[in-house]
Image (cartoon, rainbow, N blue to C red; front, side):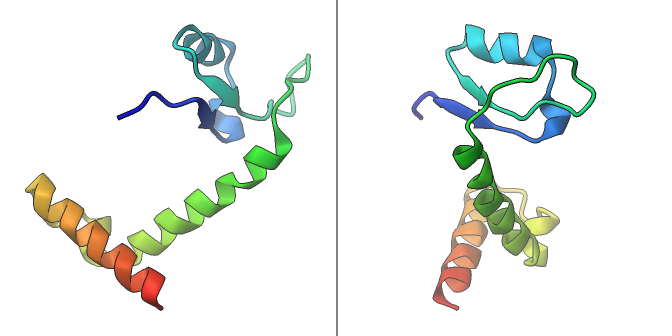
Length: 92
């Protein structure tokens, strides 16, 4: 796998130590600051809005009971179930 360039996160992941750890690994954080943060944090608002698509995709996959409960123990079979669910979701 390639190294990620960005990490899209929710306000719950807003911590200075977490941001520093990501920066040490060469990953840029796209995490809005918490409301009680004293100094505002800059983040890419367009990129953050696109995070919604990822959450919707995981929500649709969790509609499939076999995927949501990790019914299959074998990683290959589990990945096949995810691929099948994604195919049916895309088809519909």
